Length: 255
Image (tube, rainbow, N blue to C red; front, top):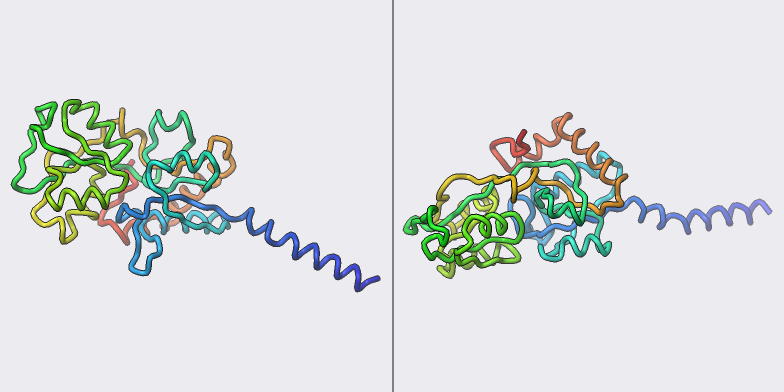
């Protein structure tokens, strides 16, 4: 009888193990094409500031986390149909997005800029930007261009890599996107030679929102609270600074 009871307990334990493990897992979606925040490493794995930060947050929460690549236009739809648990992809917290999803507290602040070849001069006073063809990515950068330069020729790309390829090969005259990402993804690379920032940094609140947060489903309040607590903890204990300093020479957290 004792052996049978022990066997039953063991069987129940084995049966429950996968359920417990699954409950502890969190899957985040990211682009894997937005260096230095998220990109493909040489071995094909997803790496970057957000991946390091995400793993640090999950460690604080005693959770196991994985990152999966997702095109930008599928981020919010994929979250809502539960393909993954959160969006960890430099998504700005805006009022428009908050109609569909929730966000954690901001984990960094962003500003955008124009980049063009040194031979190209952008007329920022012209609502058509002098007839230049300008590339951007969906979301806050696209919002600003449509609002400020309604007559400009704008090409929207689903990922930054394609946009950088086109501007470096001459199929675009300029690009407009997150300043840090333009710096690391284009200007500090071989293909960025002969290109530079033009104009001022832009952080229009109407388009750029309240900073960058992790996108979550509205009903996942417990996960949001746990992530907010973890964000505060990594800021307080120096973990955030260590990760920040691995990628940047200044604090991107902002105010």
